[in-house]
Length: 253
Image 1: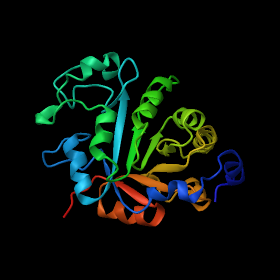
Image 2 (image 1 turned 30 degrees about the horizontal axis):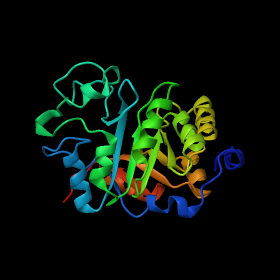
Image 3 (image 1 turned 180 degrees about the vertical axis):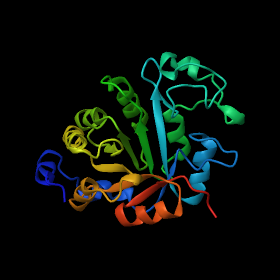
């Protein structure tokens, strides 16, 4: 158990179990079920996950006005024929950019939510590496307005979860955690400080870090733990032992 677990319980209380119950019960396809010619974070990848009844994990980036687009990279060049940073473009320009290999345009989050339509749960990872999280968080909140399916937001940036706690507390929120490069005392302190800032409902944890006293102590007190990114049979066994559900990227047989 973590020596700071009493402070964790005080400064980042666990959620009501019913609030986060939907997180358990199905694995999550990392960026949708992609591979074998299907592009990550594309409507085709999400359809493939839905057909299996698996949850979906996706990434959102902000256009220059904060509009939420489903796209992982900060740069466009890996997944499109364009160059440069997505965040430097207006939403109207991003709407015209084709994904590679005939997978359609870069989708807005609202369009993906319309596609999923509550058929499976969705985990929305908000990609933000600075202090200015408000515009993108607001765009995600607006996209979720009226959505009746099961959805949660999460981020490495604890300010994202803090924003949702203050401005949209009805939306389930998570903290994404990796201990890579931070297994020393400074790293442990940083993890607790991030937890106290975020006050999350669940953790999304790096599978390479298990077993983890930080993950275990918070799971024991009521925070569900999903783990990313599960790619091998051995990692699948680790996930089954130390987490509630995997976020996987494995071929289906």
